[in-house]
Length: 65
Image (cartoon, rainbow, N blue to C red):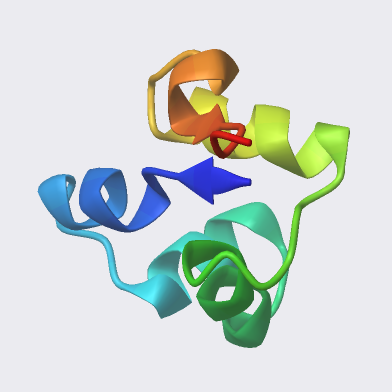
């Protein structure tokens, strides 16, 4: 899944570490999600969307087949 987390995180002046603490996950989890190496659970995706003030459908998109 593609995502806009890195751009939205940076636009809000948050470091990966800051986002990880706010979501109660490791920094490595944030890195993996931002690099499209890990798809978060639905619960985590919704927390990310809420925290970054964007709809989950905008935050995450499926790649073109």
